[in-house]
Amino acid sequence: MREISLDRLRTLVVIADLGSFAEAARQLSLAPPTVSLHVADLEARIGAPLLSRTRGQVRPTAVGETLLARARRLLAEADQALDEVRRQVKGQTGRVRLGASTGAIAHLLPQALETLRVEHPGIDVQVQVLTSQSSLARLREGSLDIGLVALPQVAGKGIRVTPWRRDPIMAYVPIDWQAPERVTPAWLAQRALILNDSNTQLSRVTSEWFALAGHYPQARIELNYNDAIKSLVAAGYGATLLPQEGGAAELDPRIARRPLRPALWRALGIACREGPMERATAHVLEAVTRVGR
Image 1 (cartoon, helix red, strand yellow):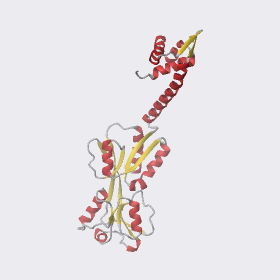
Image 2 (image 1 turned 120 degrees about the vertical axis):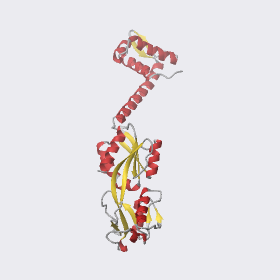
Image 3 (image 1 turned 90 degrees about the horizontal axis):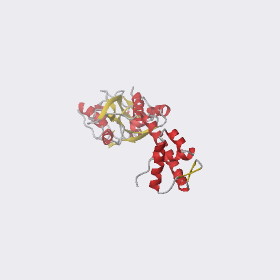
Image 4 (image 1 turned 90 degrees about the vertical axis):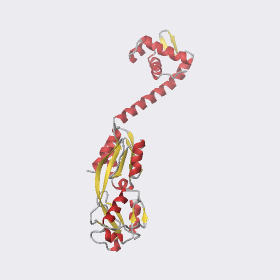
């Protein structure tokens, strides 16, 4: 048996509510023969009468009552589904999947999420901790909508990467090391180091900074969680190079933060798929872009 059309169910509900085929036809803006055809089609598929006609009054049969109860729920759910989709198309609701590093999530994203909470409370932003390469890979496969990535990157076909912000990379050293006012590669290369994983863009940038001065230090440990790295620095385990994200945040008093000589910067970009974009994604993109201004 073929599926029952929602239009036919709606016709049945309106006839039952109004008690008249003619009134139902007027309310639904249908020709009377079309209304009769809808009911006849339903009765043929079910194999039983759905409406009884006595003294000009149309009433549902026992079978019709059972179908009407189900039909009302189905129509209400269909209307609710359409309303939710329309709200999503308008950008009032929606789910947006965003990938970023732990540092960006901790120090940069909160500003954008606060803006979204006020301006677009119906949008659900699902944040995932990802490296730049993982973000680009998931954008390509369609399981991510926006990625905050370290620059430069080869985006690949179908992906657009635009510059977002530039943050200074600073030296974070134990306070009792008595670091100079500006830390050089020569000074830092002689100390124990805690650096980012070699697969990250930050690792490549800092390695080049050392290499240009003729130094190739080995890290005591490699980590990709900035807060964990700073905890180890505070414990005196080593020094590190990290971007200063979100302004000059308050530091653990056991850590000294120093600018570098020569200066070093970490550039970030926003990656997304090319082509038409859902409004919810566009709203998130706008809020994130503001943080970089």
